[in-house]
Amino acid sequence: MKDVSGKTAFITGGASGMGLGMARAFGAAGMNVMIADIQQDALDTQVADLKGRGINAAGIRVDVTKREEVFAAADATIKEFGKVHVVCNNAGIGVDGSAEKTTIENWEWCINVNLWGVVYGHQAFVPLMESHGEGGHLVNTASMAGMVSWRSLSAYNASKFAVVAISETMMEEHRKDNIGVSVLCPGVVATNLASSSRNRQEEHGGAKKSKNEERMTEMLATGLDPDVVGVQVLEAIVDDQPYIFTDPSLRRHIDERFRRISAGYDWADNCKALEGVKQGEDLIKDAIK
Image (cartoon, rainbow, N blue to C red; front, side, top):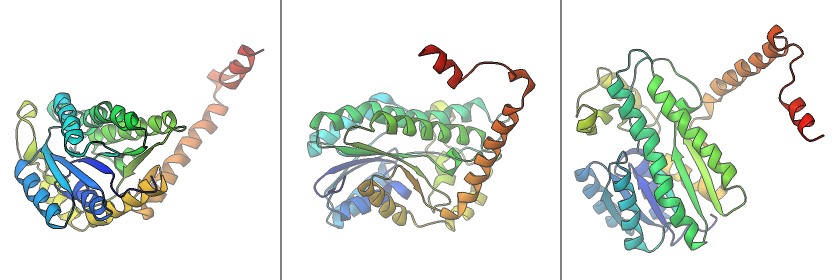
């Protein structure tokens, strides 16, 4: 999307952090902005602030784990602005712990917000973006934890790897139309992710303080300004950039992951169990003879 002025953006997790940074950047570029958030007081405050900046903004309270609420938000966006062109599935929460020690309650909460929230966003908004034929762009917020598996973040890593996989699939599915797809993989950004349990739904145990909340809050406070991320996301939309990395210095971790994967293929090349077994391209060649 080279020209975003006058277009409409919908952003989940839009009342704080990177979502709010996106809203400010989009609005400054002349876009209409609908922000969605689970926290009503923060939502009201930030909609007022956006309007005070001269941005055509509105807000709606949404729990992204509830499919019907995401669809209702899509209807409200169309009612307010007529069309939607940019959708940022940005709402997310953080859970730490190993696979075997993370409680099922935390596993379900993490997957429901970080993964199902993105899925519901696609189902509710992509048909609306396709219907007007003017093109659009999807931005799914994953994490560097969707590219590299950090220790003691099993549920979080799994949810963010899934968001990367869905995004890459959609990149292929929309390769020949006018809907762009980006996956945002931030490093350390100064958000309130560490205190996300303040909004934990009752079915997932209700609000409670994480044992590592203070340590994580201190670390995140040193991170990148979310407003910078918002400007970067806008630039990526205009440039139709599929991967958005906020910290190029972390590239070495991805390079190391790919090195280990390549070493796995080297091992498979010499694996005795596979000697003489037809597979892959050999099977395709046989099929088309």
